[in-house]
Amino acid sequence: MNTKSLAGVVLLSFLLVFGSVGKGHCEFIKTKIAVLDFEVHGKAFHTRDMGAIVSEWFITTLVKDGRFDVVERAMLQKILAEQKLGATGLIAEDSASRIGKILGVKIIITGSILHLTGNIEVNSRIINVENGSIIAAENIRCDTEAELQTQIKRLTARIVKNFPLTGYIVKRKNQSVMIDLGLDSGIHAGMEFIVYKEGAVIKHPKTGEVLDVEQVLTGRIKITGVQRNMAEASILKEEGDGISYGQLVKSVQIVRKAPETRNLGDGWVLTLREVPDLGSNEFRLSFKTVPNDASIRILNIEPRYSPGMVLQSGRYHIEISRPGYQTAVRWLTLLAGREVVCSKTLSPLPEPERVEEHVVETDTEPASEKKEIREEISPLVLLLRSNDARDKIKAAKEIINGENPDKTVYEEVEKQLLAGYENEDGGRRHTDAMAWLCKALSSSHDEKYSETLETVRDNSPSFKLTMYAATSLLQL
View 1 (cartoon, helix red, strand yellow):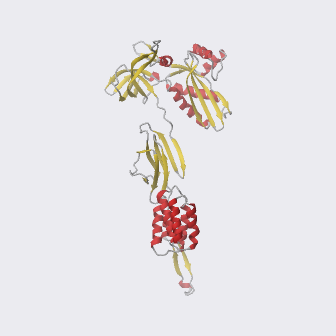
View 2 (cartoon, rainbow, N blue to C red):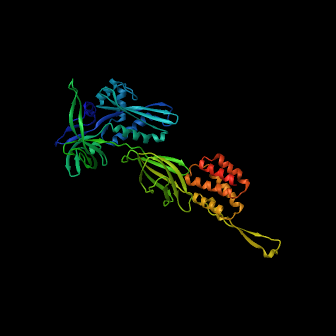
View 3 (tube, one colour):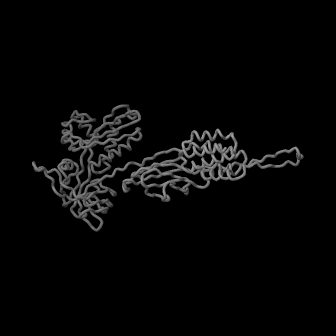
């Protein structure tokens, strides 16, 4: 098999070997590897023999991949004992060579587990037994033992990318091709391959040594069906002269991070997923709300929100509302290259307070002719208690423009103003509502509210609200 470079010759000589078999096709030869027990450093684990357990997790995942012939751990332990070699950790060059000769192993995977307070780190190394050199190294971290097996699977996937499957295009028909890799090589539907042809040979001008062979990309394919020693693929894209019979293929592995969840507090949750098909400064935005028919607005941009809309990274002012529920408003800073799903559960508005009925006795009427007087909560008070800033503004305007209301209304204005003047997350409309409450309080012309307005003037984080409080104080 042709290879890309001299370094590729060294690597691929023990990764993928094809030999002739009876009917003239090539049979995939699995790469034979051994996995040593991992060394454990630091704090003791709750589970004994964690180094051996991690080794078994590696072995299981590598066997399931299909492209490796993994030496049984029991056999490996026996050989190491007979040869009086260490079963864990880094091995010397001569030890690697001896293991390779005895077992026919080309690759050894080994490493260490570092257990510190609140953190577990696993470091793995891929060793070429021909010379004892480290071909590649990978590591992962996690917080608990419970997460370790899942992280080992992710680490194994990163190791596997160092062993790409290579083969040939053996047939093309329209937008489909056949390649000479199948079930025996561990291939499966959904895998993607780059397709290339070899170009110019690059040689050292003095020694004539072959330094590299140019790879000319011609396209990309995705596996759609797998047979024992062949696979069918659809063409995803073509470049240059396009894909044709006899060109080479090499598997590519896209390792994407698991979705990240961020709890922002107050019921706001962001789920972030990496998305490869976005521009360098774009993200995709969606919402999941309870109730699911809530209205969503982005207050600081012109386009109306639509599910899955693509936006430029930046800061966005989000409002989620529905009649009968408290309106939620928040600024979110959102970064590029991700799909962002924002989840929010709205809180129902409190039930209106029940009307209380009192029987009031008067001195001028007989006890048998008592009058029933209903004492109801003012509609203005209900508007002031709403979590929608628009209701508060409406109430304040009615207080200012109408007849002097009952003192309980002004008391509610004061209560709502003190509860909300320091809130920086409510946005522009919330600040406007607080400013209107200052003006409503000044319309009372009652000196007892001067201390409240002074508090707002001196402590509000909003310059606008500070100015309104100062003006209202003068008009009180």
